Image 1 (tube, helix red, strand yellow):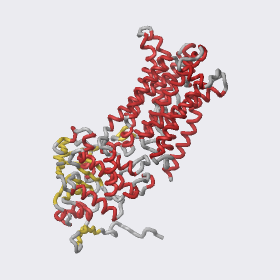
Image 2 (cartoon, each protein chain N blue to C red):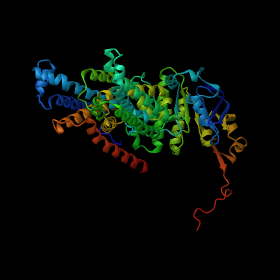
Image 3 (spheres, helix red, strand yellow):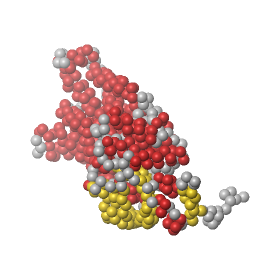
Image 4 (cartoon, rainbow over the protein chains, first blue to last red):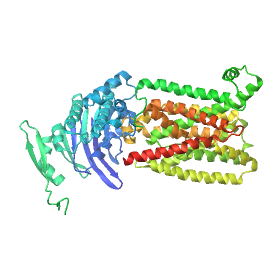
Length: 270
Length: 347
């Protein structure tokens, strides 16, 4: 279990999280949604151990995150950062393998790298330097790095938690699908997955549970069908929302923007 | 940095071997060439203990300590440079630029000028270590200071680090000037030679101390190759991948201060090796530190030995300081790097 209990944190004088509690079970996918500045990335950073909360506690597999070494944390959870970058033009294959601990034998490590690359649709690009990949391809390579680290941790006998901060940003539709499918597959293999998403239609397609954050608190948490409704979302986002259902049961969450209201005139006035 | 010559792993070992051969050849040339030329065959015979008394004196007392110090200087500066560049994710980092060499120089100069005051009360075995120790202290204080200054909100700013280095270099320069001002005539002559950097003129004891410290710290830095790869993702992501970021930084800072302090004490401030060698290594062999670190060391040794050979053979019997030669190559190289980096960010 990965759990945050009554977590509060103050950054630069502003209270970013206020007594937030969230529990993640093995095999489930929880999606964190909320407006900009709601505290989603901060909560993710507390769960990953990168930030120490001022109040409350974070436990991973029952152990306090603050007491585990970075190395042990790296085996228990892997993270895809919000804007992952690399300053060196590693070959994609090398980058994907960076998070695999040295205890994994090289043969095994190579196998994990290839599996992770295939899972994110990068199989054909694995021998290219990162500097030759497009933005979306590079993002998927970092996702593959997180997946490879996750499977290495599981090979070493750990439970495995996958934390994803906006994993679909900068991806086209097909690759959004392949990344979400990879996350779903990780959950099916027993990992617990927490993903921050902005696209609520994607959130509805991916999540077992959705947690809605607003101003440093979780204001609603439950199955997508209960949270992704106009009544819950509209007051938090300040936007009118309608839901459309496809014949196969997929639901699209559609914001109703009022674009003329904000004084939008012709872009090029004569 | 875009295209390394040898992204293909099969080329890495032959290229490393070539660099090692080059370093060995330059070392042999350094032993053979000079005012008295000794053919390579005789050099090897002399090293085996079968030389004439003159050959033995020239090789064992003059040229061998010089080559050994050159190897130590190349190793320490190139390895520190490669580690700092990896740690800071910036190809412009160099022990000289961020003030570490300046701090080491100040420590060493203080010992040359003021050491006489305390030398009488110290045991004799400690004396050859006094200079490296003071240089290490100077280097260690500077690296702790600039790292602390450049760190805010959990990330290290390279721009601040280099500006801090400029300030530290100015302060160290002024303090060294003050030392020069109060020094006696004899000390002044020592200082002048020392501040320009030279591989000759150091006795066996100082060379041995510097080499020992360098080769003791080198494994500490070599072990960080995976950590330095991870640093390329940024400090947050390196932590996510399971790295003890602060611990690695501390180890690299201490090892760098020790190695740079030791060779600076023995050879004086020699600039730009830590900048040029890792860069050439990266061009040839790509960004992975497991090959980048050894390649940097080999190229650093080659550069130092070649520069030393050049100054010895340029206008014999006079011998311009080696620091002059490395700065002559390194200065323009640094400018070229700056222009290239700028071109890339504005592209």
